[in-house]
Length: 226
Image (cartoon, rainbow, N blue to C red; front, top):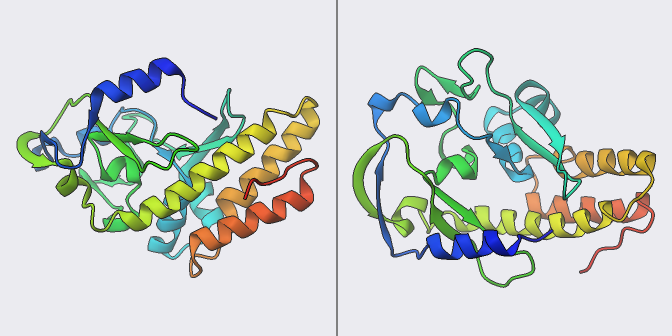
């Protein structure tokens, strides 16, 4: 699953290097404004893994209580997001104007806001960052490197890049299925293997790789490109 040329061109124009500066700061007076009626907060499997570990809950319970999903129209993959509250549309992890997901369990898209990032599938380059439209906050100046805490985000990137490779392999496979019933069964198997079947006391990437290997045994025609 790749990006179209228009997207790539747009991102290249907006790209920021790690030592580029931008203006933004979180203000207590905003009371979590960026967490209300904002874009859908997409969660990758590692985000959910870390949330479950933080709250010491089974992953299946975290998903049941806090998430919703749909299948991507292009990728055909299950896409998980945080279920918002009815009424004000706020993130369900927002309490008294503050996020209850602290430190490394905060979803990566929230952790680096107002920056966004992308990675070209199949590329040896790491993540590339860009500045999103800012509708709140202050004007404090800092570098991208300082904002994302580059010294500690490396472990998250290791997980995210492993997931990005899996997305490419699984999407290619799912898009090759023509039978609707076969597709439905394959999508369910993929969701369980990639989002649910983890022990939070064991390394995420190790388990993801094992789950993908198991999918080769249950999904006819699915072969991994090691």
